[in-house]
Amino acid sequence: MFVDKAKIHIKAGDGGDGCVSFHREKYVAAGGPDGGDGGKGGDIVFVADTNLSNLIDFKYKKKYIAEKGQDGSSANCTGRSADDLVIKVPLGTLVRETSSGRILADISTKEPVTVAKGGKGGRGNAHFATSTRQIPKFAKPGFKGDEYDITLELKLIADVGLVGFPNVGKSTLISVVSAAKPKIANYHFTTLTPVLGVVKVEEQSFVMADIPGLIEGASEGVGLGHEFLRHVERCRLIIHVVDVSGIEGRDPKEDFEAINKELANFSEELAAAPQIVAANKSDIASPEQVAEFKAYIEEQGYQFFEISAATKKGTKELMYAAALQLKDLPPVKVYEAQPLTQSELDEKLLSKKEFDITVEDGVYYVEAEWLWDILRSVNMDDYSSLQYFQRVLRSSGIIDKLEEMGINENDTVDIFGFRFEFVE
Image 1 (cartoon, rainbow, N blue to C red):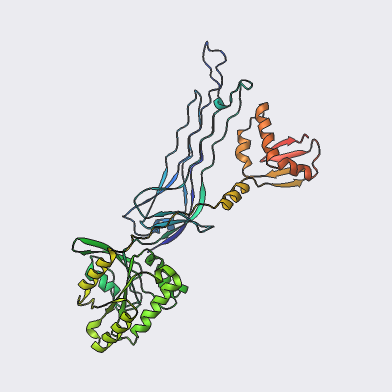
Image 2 (image 1 turned 135 degrees about the vertical axis):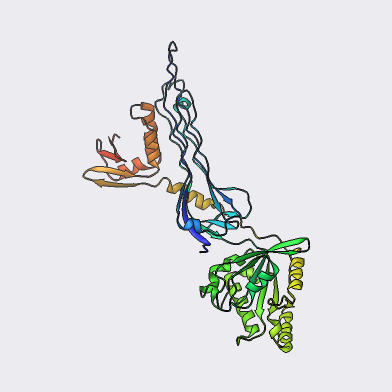
């Protein structure tokens, strides 16, 4: 089974929590706070593996969660940072955020790419000692790691892409010019997955991809071609294979125009890509058919080659021409990661401060996911810690909202099960 698109959930590790601890040693009076910091959470790292050819592994495993950083401990010991979670994907895999569609990474080289960063560790209570607060009984929890629903999309990395209608001889051509061994038979959609082959021309070599047969309407989801059009996008050069014999009652001119229309409908860049036309099955076509099609192609400014993949006629010259043209073409396309815009960053920041308040039986229930980590860090027996919590409630607008909703002195407020009486 060939899988070239998959949706998964990734979450980098949360940072470890800071420690609340005080130095205790015989004959050492007032040792002071010595709680260490939490360790960093593990990153989610993507790396290309040349032994992988598709995304089938992600069909069965959908969640990838990195390890949490270790909590800090006494004696100012920092917790161990968690190991990164390395996810191996085929070369040429695009990593997109599912909700927005923006590109997070293009795994087109063997360099590891960090897609989700682990959270930083929380600070231990040793950091909060001051001249006026010598016994801080609180520490900070670790920060949360990045979390995404992502779509993995494989776009094969090939220098040359073979396109054309089914059964025009693309599989035969790649089998005679490279070591690739695709399935070859005389019926539509013989090739069900893209096939890669390495072509050697003297000292030069390049990668050629046999893209499964396109048909009219492929860009709109007809046939199999729409599943594989994305694999042509990176190709630096297109070899358009056309059955010039017309033996199956097809018109080579109409076929040529139909395939180019599908490429243009899918991507304007594809329509403008350099193209060489290979008139295949010329050994069973009349000289008049070949001459007429050649004139038509050259009129449009394309290079034309008369070939027969079955007998290898003209295939060597075709590969030489492809190698020569590749020397002057830019490298394989690499997609740049798309960072969040300033407005998106602002929106993300605001969303972290969202909250909802409901009243039930005289109790005011505050729901705010971001408050959980802050609540965990509060020591209810420590005055300065409680003051910090009160400042957070005030600055976030929660207290203003409670007052707007008509809360009175000594009414009960519930935040994640922690209840306290409201005091103005």
